[in-house]
Structure formats: C-alpha cells, structure tokens
Length: 445
Ligand code: GLN
Image (tube, rainbow, N blue to C red; front, side, top):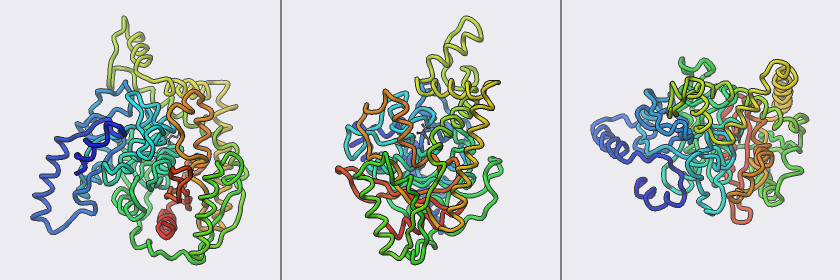
C-alpha cells in the first residue's frame, strides 16, 4: 500500500529521493515469514518507514540531497536504522531534504524541491521536509528526520504532523551524516503523538558508538500518555508570542493555550531575555561546525569525484561542482568565524551566548514543567518566496533554534489551521524529560 501510494502521489509531492521498491518487497516477504512463526512481535512490526537521506543505510544510496554524494552507498547502517530493523520495520526509501540539512524549505535540495501535500505551491519546511511530506501524504506510516535548528519540528508544523526532537544525547547520532555535531539530533515524524512515543521508545538509548550519547535510562513512554495534565505548570515566553509572529499563527496558539488551561494546566508568561541572540549565535556555531565536518568531502574518500590536473585541482573541482550555493555559503561563514584573529570575536563569543541561552531555560525550568509557544512564526510559505534572501529564511527558525542551543527536547503538534494551512504548537521540556512533553502533547491532541 505504501508503494502504491508513492506511485500515486510522489510524482507531485517529491518526498523521496530513493524508493527502494525491491528491498521493501523483499523485506515484507521476509517479515511475513518471521511473523508467521515468531511469537514475539517487534514494537513497530511491518510498518513502512521513510528515512531522511542523511541517515546511513548499508548498500542503499545516501545522498544528503547533495550532488557530491549522488552515488554514495554506505557500508554500514546508522544505529537508529539498526534499531528500527530490530523492531521489524520496512524501509521504503530515503526522503528528500535540504542539502546536508542546511535549510528551512527543502529548496536547497541538490536534486528537486519537495512540495507541501496541503498545497503543492508551498514548501513543506525543512530540512526534513521530505520526511514530513511523506507522512502527511500517507506515503509511509512514519519517518525519521534530524533536527539541528528546527529541521524536524518546523516541517512537522508546516505539514500538519507530529515532530519530536529528543534531548541532545538521547538518540545515537552514529551513522547520521554530521552537519553541526553539537546540535544534531535524530527524531520521529509521525501522524500522532502516540506513534511518536512508540518510535522514540525504539530509537532512544545509550550507544557506545556515539560518545555524546547519554547513559540515561529510557522510560516507558507509552505509560506516560495518561491524558492527565492537571496542575502542570506551563511557561509561555513573551518573546515567542510577540513581534514577527503571524496573527493567524498567534491566534491558533492562543486557542491551544486556552485548551491546555481547560485541561487543568496553569499558564504563566515568562521571559527568555537572550532569545534575541539565538539566531545570530546559531549561525556562527552551526556553520563553524559544518565547515569542519564537510572538510571530508574531498572527492577522494566519498561520493562523486571530478577530474583535476593535480590533487588540489581535483579537490577544487569536486567541491565547486558538488556543493550547492547554501552549503558553500555556510562553509565560508564557518571557516571565517574559526579563523585566527576572528575566533575570539565570533566563535568564542557565540559559545558564551549559548551558555546564557541555556541558563535562561534552566531558570524557567526551576519553576515550570514545560515551555510552550508556536513552532514557527509563519505557516508554510510559497516555493520561491524566501529563497533569494538567506536572512529571511534563517529567521523562520527563530523559535526552534534556542532549543537546540540549549540541548533540550521539544515536540511540534498540530494545533489548527490558518489560511487553510496547519499551525504547529511547540512544547519544550527539561533535558531528558521527553515523557512530559509527550504527555502534554497527547493530552492536547
Ligand atoms: N534551518 C536551519 C539551518 O538551515 C536548521 C536546519 C536543521 O535543523 N538541520 O541550519
């Protein structure tokens, strides 16, 4: 059914870069046989899944939507891919994204943009836009994405699905192609909150192969979906409801807050005094880390190799032709911010501001259980609307970026429509307290 649906709609939606029809059918047959004789069913048995194309899949093309990796076939699986396989899922294909996860609209894909299934003239958000669109269009049951500055939550909001970014360290990043290593996290995009709890249950946990993955127990998430949020203390930062938020978005979020209150939550306004600096901080730290991470694409070790008259020339040709304009912009920004003489003024300063942003959240979480606001300041915008101005594009992540800088978990859950397009409610939790944000989102949903 999943393959049939892809056949029907993906010509328009373009959520996939690779559909592994043969592999999926083989896997389905294999699971049929396994499930017929085995007593034990995996938690996600026989569910078709889409994987963002920056998750390494053994023998299955993994491009990061970059021309440079157009032919790259990993020789190993990401830990999350292994864990899904152990839970008996079927990988149907690899989903489209902004190149190397840099972008908010999927327009930076080196191959083609994905279209929002709600309105094909609009973007699905990014960078996990293919994953969000695939779930929204019913092409797969759920998908995995990655979130460095909002890339799971913002596309989830734009496509009317649920998107969860776990706490930094909750899910192993082994086999996730690195963009900004201190910010990246893998998480689920699902049709509802219960599904997100199931998927997180499967992919969470310490992994010896990722030194930043945390040795923190994984609770039974499903048992937390009680529907009861009486007495829950909700903080709403005034910076998340003020200037720059579209009136239609603000209205839906206000309705959502009223609903949380009806359910027994106590809502109070708070302030995130350093929130104004989050985007600037992120656009120093993320490109700095990216410029270092992307140094490995030299045309020798991975992917496509262009001819050159000598080795330096080979590097130059491969990188000039392989990377798209946004990736080049980030490499240049990051290299500049890390250069001697500028390091203290930019990179080090950004790290200090990052600490202040984290402390803002710590102070709030000393008194409140969750922080709530919109996921994105706007509904899904039109394809082409922001692509010529990187700064307006960057500002679309203003509400999601602080969460990555602080390393916290957050979920986006649909909370109504504005101009016929979905709006996302963002619920941010304490570090490693995904259980509470899932409980709140589930009670609200
Ligand atoms: N849009 C942000 C960026 O371009 C975030 C992307 C992400 O979370 N991967 O960096």
